[in-house]
Image (cartoon, rainbow, N blue to C red; front, side, top):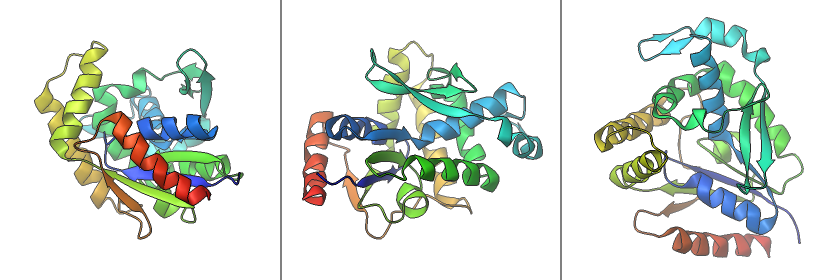
Length: 228
């Protein structure tokens, strides 16, 4: 069976990573969470004291980009690849609300995007890859055989994120999460470099009222048509 490239874009907390992992497992494809790469750079900037809620030393972040090594290492017990920053597992650290509050600012920086896009394109050279993010179908893989654009209401997305964080023990409020979701939507959609937009040939998929099983079933049918 031929291999294709599947690009999944969309707003935060629309389940892009979930369906991308499911598709990669079903098809035996490589899965790349591009958003996790931006989160890793954000975590690096936080640890270097380059960024906080009211301060961002963009110049020093850019100067040290070459010292950042991001990799994905498969965890057989979990069934997916975890993110490593300079050979340290940061899968849990990059998912915190603090990182979520700052990642859109880091993702706005053209030099950061250039560095990560180059890495992402290298990962997809041989096809057989599922990648999710904000500009995968428009910038990273504009010639992808299948492009999906995921969407859902801000309230639904905030509830999913709230459930995810509280389930693992983070202390957050729904209002905080909803505010962050709307803020990230605005930043991602209005930034000058590679704003979040739906590619002209992307299939838009609203999962506000779908279960994970229903979502995967419907999306896999779309994938099957592309594989024939």
